[in-house]
Image (cartoon, rainbow, N blue to C red; front, side, top):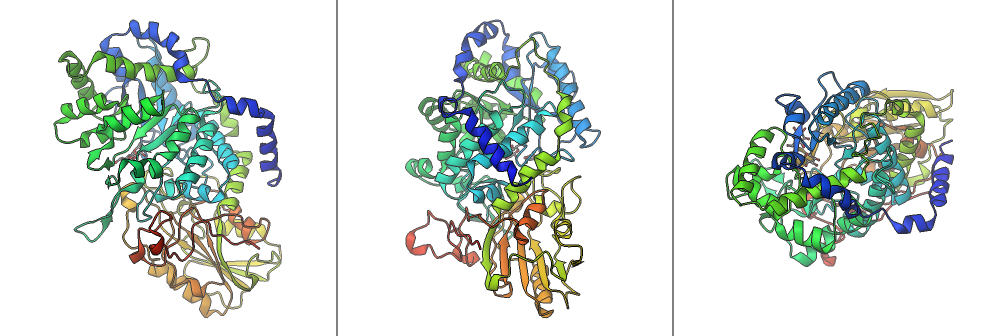
Amino acid sequence: MVRNTPAAFLAALLTLGPAARAAGPKPLSSYDPQVKPLLAGMTLEEKIGQMTQAEQDALKDLADVENYFLGSVLSGGSSDPKEGNSLQAWTDLYDRLQSRALKSRLGIPILYGVDAVHGHNNVLGAVIFPHGIGLGCTRNPALIEKVERITAEEVRATGIQWTFAPCVTVPQDIRWGRTYEGFSEDPALVRQLSEAAVRGFQGMDLRNPLSVLACAKHYVGDGGTTYVSGADGRGRLDQGDTKVDEQTLRRLHLQGYISAVKAGVGSIMPSYSSWNGVKCSASRRLLTEILKQELGFEGFLISDYNAIDQIKPGDYKGSIEISINAGMDMVMVPTNYRTFITYLKELVNEGRVPVTRIDDAVTRILRVKFAMGLMDKNRSQLADRGLHKTFGSPEHRLVAREAVRQSLVLLKNDRKTLPISKQAARIHVAGKSADNIGDQCGGWTIDWQGRSGQVTTGGTTILAAIKGAVSKNTGVTFSPDGAGAEGSTIGVAVIGERPYAEGAGDRSDLALDREDVAVLNNLKKAGIPVVVILLSGRPMIIGEVLPQADAFVAAWLPGTEGQGVADVLFGEYKPTGKLSFSWPRSNGQLPLNINSPKEKYDPLFRYGYGLTW
Ligand code: BGC
Ligand code: BGC
């Protein structure tokens, strides 16, 4: 069954025909004839409302959606429905807010935005896919398109129609806490996979009720920031400054946007970070000249969470002025939306923000709403609860499992340690992450930062997957620290990083935890061959443990489907994953990547490395 899934999918893709694919989606500006008359009848308040995105749990009053004509509402990484994170609670929340928007004078529906960055990851029971770094190692655009189509369908099951994904970043320094959100350090691979991801989310036509609006982020150079050592001894990269000339910015960091725009991406999120000291959210050169005028982006820009507050110099009102005039179209103001609306209105009345700029922003937002069929009076804008049937379904999980097995990179395999025989007498599994779905999923899972342990429902831990894969005569024992392995045929250590997101994951030291090293030592003491499965959001410094391991697998942050790992361990699937990031020997070498000077490029494993058998 697993084997049929990708084949069937490829067949389906082929039936689309090359002509349909080459044609690409309809240009968003083709909806302008519908936008114009609507815009002409809108008050300034209604226009500014469309440009405002508030956070659902920060709404002072539910009626604010209607009274302030909000164009959008979001749930940030930890912004749960009051009733909890069930599918039901999320769907009810969406319907509650959308019903409010439909009651406003013009009845323009809201776009509801979430970070569905590896599946509909805020909702219990959703299938959680590998994070970007693992998908990058598959190098399989058709698979990534399929992954995002399923994500779109699960998002739509809650009524939500917008995801802040894909992250088309090109991380150049793996000490950055967002490395795992990116596909690769290589702009060419990012370019290819970003296009596939956008096509997966949006499909060929945004009007399809199973499509969601994608958002390429974080524009631009978020992965190119300069490492700054902090007073606390901890380095910092997140939301920093990318100090490169324009040619380098284009060559390394712009590539994913070129292909995302080509695939018709409807929204793009400017980055918290700066380019040569200027915040991206304040840069007319980046937002208007390069993206809109030169690349021909016809969708709208959504600022990052409270990002425009960081624009200096200036008070908040001045920051709004700078950003909107630079080309920002919608502003993510999780809590201060009432103040934002007041100030923007003042700015327009004072002539500091031209009405033409407001009209351009609103046109861009409404184009997308028309393109998505949101303005279609014959269509319900409430959630289609029929989609609950397939939410987290076995079919969806099979695709995630396929993504997991293709994402694993085999770094070492001495004396044919892998594959393990399903008939082995006894397998000893060890390590803090072996029976830990939270560690498998990483950050952006239910909570913004993710959580170790039982973070969600459904899915299979690696330990459970191993138990499910072996013969009935095989004993599987487990200890978190590797004790008690004596007498087993082989040991499997599942070790690595604990979940984190964004700046909280910035690290100057990528060495393994002492606790993880101890697990390996214990298994070795038992005198058995040892397989290491490393769960991490980036390459780690493994020089110390690699000699102890007979086989070593980089499994990244695979998500809920641990069976994909077992498929490789037991030879159901021959490894095909290739490193999408260079693997360093030491912390001292960082940053190290294929764009580093040739004479300095001396990694432990080169970009593109990956064994098979
Ligand atoms: C992140 C974005 C995310 C947004 C909304 C920000 O902190 O940088 O990637 O989309 O929050 O949750
Ligand atoms: C939100 C995230 C957001 C972050 C920004 C958190 O509280 O949940 O979505 O990215 O704040 O700092």
